[in-house]
Every structure is written in C-alpha cells, then in structure tokens.
Amino acid sequence: MSAAAWVALAALVLAPLAAVVFLAASRPQLAVLAEPEVLEAGVNSFTSATLSALLAVAAGTALAILIERSDLPGRRALRLFALSPLLVPPFVGAIAWLGIAGPASPLNLWWRGITGQPLWSVYGGDGVVILLAIHSCPVALLVVSAALRRVPADLEQAARIAGAGPLRALATVTLPLLRPAMLSSFMLIAVGNLADFGIPSIIGLPERFTTLATLVYRYLQSGTIDDPLAVVATIGTVLLAIAALALVLDTLIGRGGWELDASSSPPTLLPLGAGRLPIAAIAWAAVLTTTLLPLLALLGQTLLRAPGLPYTPENLTLDNLGRALSSPNTVAGAGNSIMLAALAAVLCGVIGLAVGVLATRTRLAGRRGLLAVSTLPQAIPGLVIAVAWLVLAPRIGLFNTPWIILCAYVTSFVALVVQSVIAPLSATPASAEEAARVSGAGRLRALIDISCRMALPAAVSGAVVVAVTAVRELTLSVLLLSPGSQTLGVVIFNLQQAGAFNAASALSLVVAVLGLAVLGLATRRAA
Image 1 (cartoon, rainbow, N blue to C red):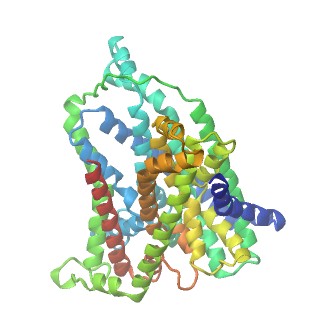
Image 2: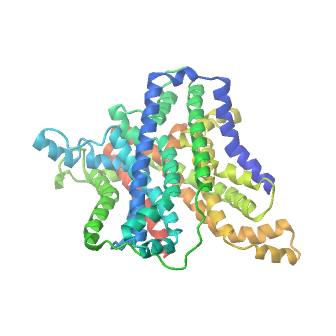
C-alpha cells in the first residue's frame, strides 16, 4: 500500500515538477527573463498578487471578527453569503463584474450621460486587484475564523478584568494571536493569485495589463518565440522557487506560533453598542455587493439582446440562454468537464485515502515525506503545474489528449482529499485498530478494515470537493487545451474572447447558480 502510494505521487507530483526543472536547466532561457515584456508581466503579477492578498486578508479578518466575536445581527447568514464566492469561478466573477462596472454597464452609461466620462471601469490593473481580492477574501475568512475559534476566551476575559475595554482586549490579546493565521492566509492567497489566469485575461488584457499567466498563454498559442516550452519552463521554475520559499516561510510561521490550552468558557461577544446597526448595514452592503450584485448583473446580461441596450421589455429575451445551452460546444465542454471532474474525484479519492491513512495510522519511516509530497501542489501555482505537464506529456504520449488535463487535475487537487482524511483520523484514537490486531487481524487487514472504513466518508467528501473544483477550473484547462478536449470553463472563456458577451454571461450564470446550489445543499446537510 505504501509502495503504491509512493509510485502514484512520484508519477503525478514529482515527475512533472522534475521535468519542468530539468528542461529549464538543460535549455536555459535566462535571457528571456530580462525581456521588457517579461519583466513588466512579472511586476504586474507580483503587484496584483500582493495587493489583492493584503486586501483579502484585511477584509477576511474584519469579517471573521464580526462573525465570530461580535453581537452583529445575522452573523450566520452573513457568513454564508461571504463564503459564496468560493463556489463561483473567478473568471465567471470577472464576466459578472463587466455588467456592473464595464464600459457598457448601466451605471457607467448613466454616469457618462451626465459627466461625459464613465464612473469607474473595471478594466485594468486596479480591476484585477479588486476582483482577485473579492474572490480570495473567503479563503482568509476561513483561515482566520478557524484560528479565532482556538483563541481561549480566558485570555480576553483576563484582559477585561485587568481593566481593558472590549476593543483594547481585541487589539492587544486577540489580534496578536491571529497574526500567524493572517500571515499564512496572506501567503496562500498571494501564491494562488500570482498565477491566476481568468481575471487578468478578461479584466487586464483589454487595458494591456499583462501578467505571467496571460503572457505564458500568449507564448504557447502564438508561436512567436523560439522554443516556447523552454521559455515557459524557465518562467515556471522561477515561480516554483518562489512557491517553495513561501511554503518554507509558512512552515516556519506555523512552528513559531503559540500552543494554547483549550478554554471551557464561551467567548465574550464584542458589544457593538450604538454602532451595531450601522456596522451591520455596512457589512451586509459590502458582502451583498460582492456576491449578490454580480449574479444580478449576469442575469441582466443574459436577458439583454445585445450589450449596452436599455432594459426595456422589447430588449429582453431568453434566446441567449437557449442558444448557449444548446450549442454543440457547450454540450461537448460540459461532457468533458463532467468526465474529467468525475475521474479526477475518483483518483484523488483513492490516492488521498491511502496517503491519509498511511500518514496518520502507521509508523512507516517515509510517512512524513508521503504527506509532504501529496500536499506540495497546494503551494504551487496552477501555471507551474500546467507547464510541468506540457513538458512531460510528449515524453509519455499524453500530448494533445484530454488525459493531460486529468493528470494536472489530480496533481493539483489530491491534497484536498488528503487534508479531508487526515482531520478526522488525527482526532480519533487508534484503539479500534489495536482491538483488531488483538483479535488476530494483520497490520494491513486492520488498516483496511478499520482505518480506511473510518476515513471513507471524509474521502468521499473530499472527492466531491475535487469534482466541484475541477468543473470550475480554467487555468489548467486553457493552458493544456487540445483538440476535442475543451472544458466548460474554456467554452465560456472563448465566448468572452470572441465577443459573444451575452452567451458567455448566460453560461456563467448557469455555472454560478449550480455552484451556489451545491453550497446550499452542503450547508443544509451540515445543519
């Protein structure tokens, strides 16, 4: 079992990463890194990733404190709405925001009629930063909220007894203890946003705001440079080194954190006093503006016959939705997405279950290495994983086939199942396995009959998350696209790039609503 897990991870994680590093070392293109367009794309990528991560962590921390530690009305519902961008693909959010702040949006058309200029156009670097922050904020909210629940209420109460007011206790006790979680979420978000493709391609490129992801896509599609694979491998290796550095820093931050005893007393909620209703109004307005308003904008774009038309009865139609859903490209893309997502979920479920059980329920010498290798892709930008499989695929016969996308999905998402399995097993004593051993079962039999069965529900849940994530993914799919293997995300992206904005909005609306429906069902079951 251990050998099979190592073989699977070596083939799906270590081999592609080694291939991209080997190609960059054997055919170095270091001169390309000094090219003006690469330097500009690099600066744009790091600037947008850093600023969006800072905004996301600031907003996520503020929401976490309001939801977990204040008497804000409607906290649970606010949390549900605040987490909804996780189920909406970033490129779908970008298309939605074009209906709110694009040049032809009703707001900008109305403002242009008054002043002669648009109020604000989402196109450009500032739009990229803001939309990346909006779609990353739920990650910061989840990480900081989890850390906030581990802060003992006794410490805050001790500060209150010593004379500190609620805000003083929050600032001097709670926030310092949240610093490791805030730094960890910042690095996680920054690495993810560094190689995001959907938002920069839709929002940035019209204003010539190029990032490394969009530059690599252009290199691979245009054929304007010699040896494009070696060039993108060199860029990918640099990003891989940055991701490895971020992983090391995150590990050091985690080791430098405080180990706190659990508290039996419930936390004292921060009283907002006279500002309770105004703060609630501001929080709800901000969350609904970034979650519900984009969906309404998508609906408006879907119903209009053409962009920029006024919302009058004669200009409203359902034809866009019908044409988008019945298009052969849509049917083929949906079929490919479902097939690849289902296969990725099964493979990740099997591999993740095996790795999680081995890492938590055995004393194998290499169990820590097994766990580290399986979770490594979480710290690696999707751009690097796509480039790695582009380099490796021709050598193993997967080039220009849909299976290269499947392999990249498994590489990227297997950590989701591993983490889902490890959490319940780590909190469960090993007495059941010991009882099986006493009854005569061998080590492998006890591992399969007891540990694997206990972890199976968590593995299934993780596999469902993998399937949902794979269906909404764009960066890997668009960079690894081959004839006949386009996914639903690629179909929407191609419609947007071809100027079929209403059809792209219609498909985006369907994807967004289905994602939110999954979130609603999961929340209902959890309740």
